[in-house]
Structures are given as C-alpha cells and as structure tokens.
Image 1 (cartoon, rainbow, N blue to C red):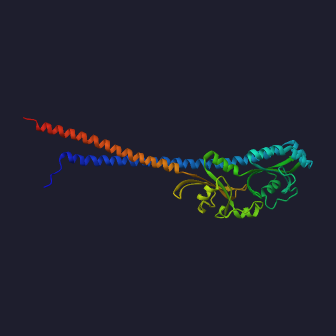
Image 2: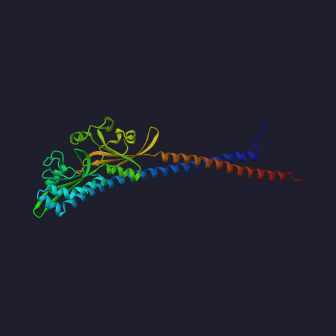
Image 3: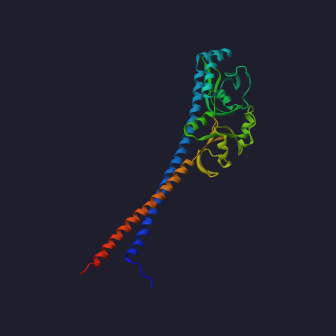
Length: 337
C-alpha cells in the first residue's frame, strides 16, 4: 500500500499552492496597474496634442488679424492708399514684410478694393493690379461688402493659408481692405516641435482642383478618401498611418490608438474649418507609441520576475519554518521518559 502523506507533506500541499496563488494575484494586479498608467499617459498625450493644435491654429489666425489691423491703422498707409500711390505703399511696407516672410512664414500682404479687386501685392507689386478675385475669394468679398474684419482659413490659388483681413478707412470713409496670409505649415511645424507628432493637412480635393489652380497636380498617393495632402511634416510617416476611416464629416476632434504593421500609434484628427465654420479638410497628427509598448513589456517582465521571487522566498521561509517545527516536535516525541 502507498504510504499516506505525512502531516509535513499535507501542510506543504496547502501552503505552497496558496503562496503561488497570492504571488500570481500580486503579479496580475501590478500588470493591470501599469497598463492603466500607460493608457492614461497615452490619452493625456493625445489630448495635449489636440489642445495644442486648436490653440495654435487660433493663435495663428489672431496673429494674422492683428497684423492686418496694425497695417490698416497706420496713417501713412491710409494716406498713400487714398492717394492711389502704390509705390509709396511698397516703400512703407515691403521691407518689414520681407522679414515677416523669411522669419514667420507670412506669405501674403495684399490690398483690395471692392468687391475683391487686387490693388497691390506687397511681395510682387508688378503682378495683377486690377485682377478680380471675387469668384473664389469669398473672405475678401464679404469683408468689403459687410465692412467687417475677417480671420480664418481659406483656400487661394496657391493653396491653404491662414488669413486676417481688415478695412482701410480714413476721415473720408472706406477705401478698401488689406489682407495678411500665413502658411498653414506653421501650425504643423509647431506641433512637431512641441510634441514630436508628425502632422499633415488634408483638404477636399474637389475644392483644391477648383480654386488652387497655381499648384501642380498632386501625386496620386497624396489623395486619400477624396482629400488631398497639402502640407506634411513627414509624408513617409503619414502615408503609412493615414487610412480612409480617419476622414469623417464629424466636427469633433478625435483621438485614437492603433496598431499598424505591428507598431503602436497614437492618432489625433481635427477638422479644418474655413472662416465660415464649414469643414473643408482635416489635420492628422501621428506618433509612434512603441516606447510605451516597450515600457509596458518591461513592466510585465518585472512583475512576473518579482512574483517568482516572492514564490521562492515565501516557499523557502515556509519550508524552513515547517521543517524546524516538525523536527523539534519529533525530537520532543523521541525523548526518553
């Protein structure tokens, strides 16, 4: 017959599984806790990028509007515009606008008369005086029609830009308007500089084909779900991560976590609205989140290793303690009477 388990063995059969069970619970709890921490870090980073995009775009619009407001309120500008003196306007403004262009991506400085007739382009005074822009520059038309300043995003013949337009008035009344236009790329470069996210702007391709006639035709790969990539900090990264499902008609900012080709990515999408508040495109910002994945993997390994160490230490302590207890008990039992 098999020998029945001794009391010592019975205790081990109870204590060791209990020790292993408690260590497993400890490891699982640690892994879940780390997962929650890393998920929270990812979401906070995505929310931060979304907030920075919103704030920087608004800041760029305010800056364009402020620049336009400053120019239209210069007495020398009002006097020269009223006197129909283009050469004097160029002398007053061109030196400072060349600095603005080189340092801050200010790409346009343009005077108009109603409804949207080009009066003077600061950067190229010889180009297009008298040209009628009213068929595609609604922002200029509405400013001169309603005599109200405007700021926002609009598509021109050279593509997407951030604009501010204000009215030029003197003691004799309204003269015309002045517009400042900045590159949309500034917003994307700022988000990359401040967060490390690669970003791109995508605009409705039908609108681009209709209005942005001075741009060369885009590569086919840059058109996704009917939207054309017009600016990008790193097209190679965006090309690998941008999918048609990211392009929706919703007016909300969205954040998402995706695994693409085995790599983890954080993605932020924000609609691009024109000065009227209509959706014309989308900003997509992406970042490889493999660093979080690697940290989580390391945390799992540490948790398992610590759990195994717990099992070994606790099992050793229990075995030694039980052994000592049973040895002493046996010794007491075997003492001569």
